[in-house]
Length: 452
Ligand code: TYD
Ligand code: MG
Image 1: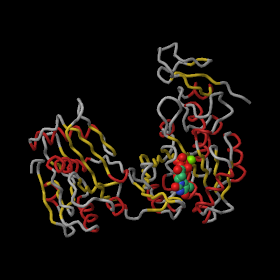
Image 2: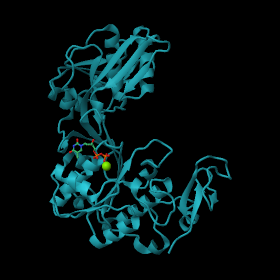
Image 3: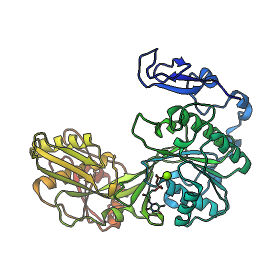
Image 4: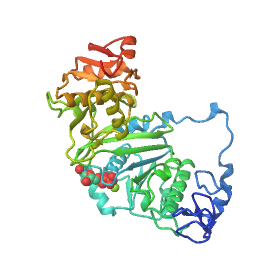
């Protein structure tokens, strides 16, 4: 039976029987998205993970002490960088979104995860809408994944996938990718906001109703044209983003949402010709190509989730050749750099107005923690003065607008990581230095403001 669908404006909620480029209600452009009518009427136009009317009795109020906790039941893949980001393994019946740029390695990662699960005797259904079963097989061979319990299914119809999940009852289901999947209930094309939202919502429901742990691959797309992973972020339990520079072999798996673990946990991998290798000590990797005695380079101890990671930040300040000076950053927010440049100008009495400023985080890493501020300042100052920093010195601290250096969390953890990699000195906020219980054998230089 086919349900009626409507096109609902995402801005004002108005429903139209047919698609139009512009909403007749509020006048907004490109806001109409196809939805199932029955559901949209009841839920105010927001399809989500709610149970349909017939399923209402599936859950019962239960004493909290009688509710099964999933901790013991987690599926541990043994791919420890992945397990840690997931919060200690995969929770059965959970839904995870794995987002990232095309070609970054999402399929590779999930194929390896599937291989590990199969190696433990679990069955995994790998639905590939992007590649043929044969191509998937070739990838599997390259990755050394040859298990018979890994079922490859080249299908793009949601209904067909649902049937197979019922029939096979796999422990995990991989949808590669959500943008290729479509339900017969909607007329919209695969990859449209309506399809992505509806298919994802149904798969999440499938997972919650005692189904498999579901992994949805989502390509990050240019906004507008087709629906990106953001559309499903609120429906799933865990959102992972796979990042990295295509030019670099390093890949970082980051949890931006996790109902079953800490967010901002990262896993570091290296893409090799036989798949992704875990990087147990990322600091060592990120610092391995650091130039000796070069001006404009500083090493920061940044906290990524529960783990400190040492990364090199580089700055290059030079005379602007044409008109407006450039401010280019890779791996850090350009606004933050602009702000720090202003702080540095004021505090150290240097003029950067007419200078080009380039800032880069080495190794394709992206840093967002405030504790990197002081290292950015140090790298900028070092480039301006053309004086290299001591290569065995570590820098971290948050910088305020008046140039004050503020304390950051987990200073000891950062210092310990530095000591492990042979650093002998650390420049850090005085607020941290005062409260330090142990310095991990490093010489500590506490600073209160940028001019120091
Ligand atoms: P892929 O997992 O297909 O990316 P996504 O699913 O995110 O689009 O990875 C694609 C890239 O990874 C491709 O450029 C080839 C490279 N690659 C390797 O370097 N080694 C390997 O073992 C595999 C399988 C892929
Ligand atoms: Mg892929």
